[in-house]
Length: 61
Ligand SMILES: [Zn+2]
Image (cartoon, rainbow, N blue to C red; front, side, top):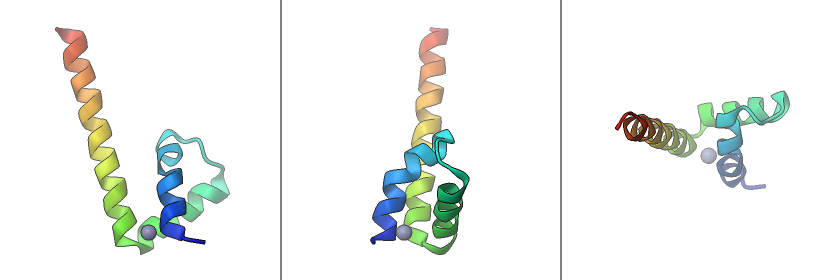
């Protein structure tokens, strides 16, 4: 099994807390060990924060 692909497929659910403890632990373990997936996760987090900010600006206007 390609762990990086598996993690990428589960990152979104991981962010939303939609994973079981066992799966979340496996994702976290891989993020700790794999620089590529850690960067992917950081990018996703940053993009989501930007979207949240934009949505706030839009609602305030
Ligand atoms: Zn990886």
